[in-house]
Amino acid sequence: MLNNNLSTLIKVGYRCLAVALVITMLGCATRLSNEQMGLSIASLGVPRVLLMQTQLIRGSDSYTMDMIVEVTPKQLMVVGSALGVRIFTLSYDGKNIVNGPGLGLPFYISNQLIVDDLMVILSDSQSFDAKLPEGFTIIRGPGLRNIYEGDQLILSVTESKAVHGNTDVSLRRTNPKYTLNIVLSEVR
Image (cartoon, rainbow, N blue to C red; front, side, top):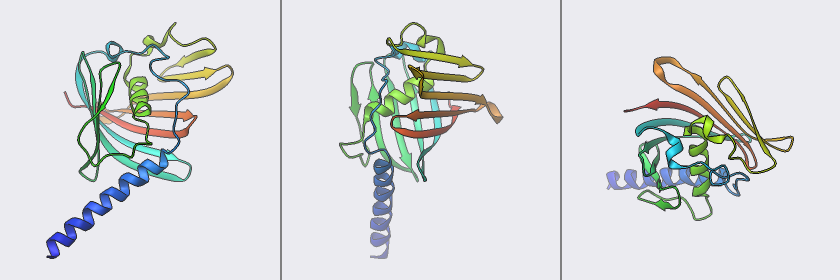
């Protein structure tokens, strides 16, 4: 009996964590999608599997989760988990996003935003050249990509090498306003 109650309590706790993450991203809609930028699965480079220890910061709220990301020549597969429980699974073939197993995120969370952010982070930075829509520009620096609409910064990605071959990545969006801090490790 105690074991069942504990199991139920843990499941409720995981769902609450997932809901908190979802609430943080409520209303998230991107003004610049990977399709608008001309990014494709091919721009992700060689097939590989990555572990992303991710922190989402929005206002005074902060949430963490792990994502396993598999890049193949034909798709991007993402599994998000928190405290060892699968929250979501997404696959993207360059045109369609498909949901897989997991506790699930409510219908109002944009899977497109998750895919867009990962495409921006993982794509070869040269893929952005000449593919941005009119009115958008990109400014590069060492480990930096800033995308502007007119004179307004809308997306910033910084990268730096960390210890043990990891890469620290920070992605900041202004609409919706949030930051992703990621420690990215290549698994294979």
